[in-house]
Picture 1 (cartoon, rainbow, N blue to C red):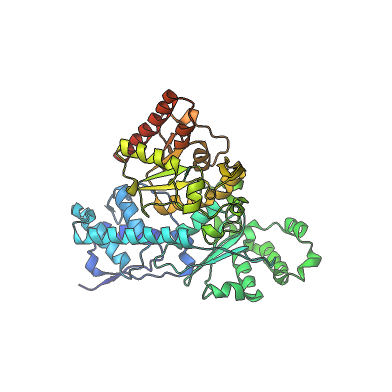
Picture 2 (picture 1 turned 45 degrees about the vertical axis):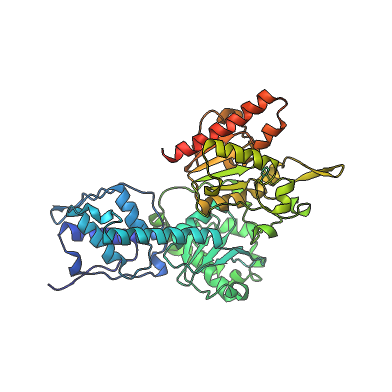
Length: 478
Ligand code: URA
């Protein structure tokens, strides 16, 4: 049987359309030759769409196509980001087998199922690594180039979803993420794909005017052009001194001559339809993003602390406990919960049947805030601006550790996890609730037990912590 050529596939959606047609015509996997391209031109069309139920019931040449469960679609969509050359052929084989009733094809015990899950795992890990290790460098020059630029060499095709992640976090500051294959620009409002003109991180520093001009051109959207606004921001007499000044007039005229309409159609066609809401506070953390926690100068607390105290525990833990800030002993040892509050917590964990070794322990604020009383450094509650400044690090830990349940130990932790400076414990201590795609349990801070005025209230506060930890363990099974 001679091989049938599939149309050129540049994205998951294109593969889906092609696969649907082949399935409807009952074309066997071994007879199809899949051609793929990973060019920049298809990049954002491959950005993740909200998981949708697969309703491939359209007619293809008089035959109904197959219907796939949502979970399988999600696996296929994730695996499509894998860099395997034969990924489209492999995904088709999975669908082919599924629709023939071979549902084992999604089981890790099946050879194809194992490969599918392996691909998904590799893609998820790459997404996670890119979230965690991508570093934006701030560029100071006001030359029309994005303010932050990052270079990353992902193994798999995860740039689109990672770009969406950063677009949600960074508010309206402009940035670009460049990879060897492609670049994505965020102009503060929308994502744009752009050619990959950088070759390494070093190019970010060396990039000359011509390069930024090229990027400026590539993000220029005639549909959104407001020439008057542009002139009011940058009076045209200054344009000649700006690198992009030379091309702006030409682009305005091109826009007036029809590109505005074309641009509009293109942009509308590309949009998924959902608006990305960005809180002003979220725009702050990335400014002056320190590379490591011990270099963090986002608030003043580093000045009087011995060191920053990072979270501790397995890289992937199902439960994360968030405290307030390191105490005197934690500040000296560089580890969370090793002082008196840690001893209370250890006892409560043991009583609840929770193994400290399997839990990720961290704090909302990573530097010890204190005041001197006599010779003693006494704990001082962090201010909201310090909690907000430090939230970036908690966010990174949440993205890296991906816990299913977060236990907020006290009000500071709750404020940070909820990113709500007005959050209070009383309304949320009764029952766990969902927040940010995970369970959140709120209990007293262990030092609240230590400060309780009498034995009865000490015992009551302690019991709340034990019950909350038990609740967290139960939620893992839910
Ligand atoms: N209190 C906290 O909140 N965290 C610690 O690490 C120690 C005491």
